[in-house]
Amino acid sequence: MAIEWKNQFATHDSHIDEQHQQIFRFANKLEALAQQEDVDTREVDHLLSFLETYIANHFRYEEACMLKRRCPVAQKNRSEHLEFKAFFARNVQDYRHHGYSKAWALQLFSKIEHWLSHHICHVDAELRHHPEKASTPSPR
Image (cartoon, rainbow, N blue to C red; front, side, top):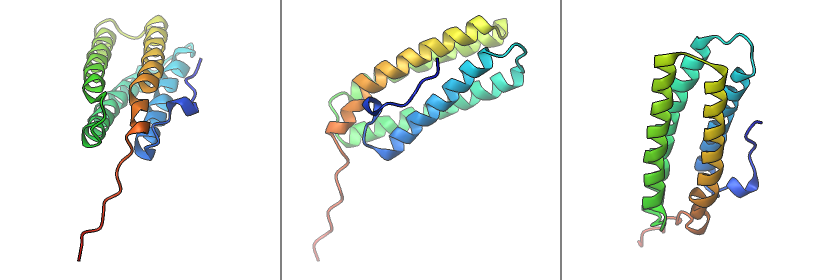
């Protein structure tokens, strides 16, 4: 079942929320591919490549935001990101070594869905309590 955006996922940072929604859209594309009988592995290759790059860029941006805002879960966030990147890399490697299978795609989607839901609600959502401070004008 597709990952749907819910208010509980909102960090109240428009850039991060849009990035999360984009990750959801591409994860949902993985699930949609898994439902097809005849899958073009070039689509899978493109999707995995995109997710790998997009996730890395998103994690870097989000980690910088947490550090800048002195968010108390910044280190936990970074640790969970490192674990997820390792998990994702293992799955990409499995795909490249063993090839595509519907079971592999559904299992990967399921794990991504669970991780995203848990991580965003329990870690990223902490950003709500640490909004970006408006820059104060310099005195004249």
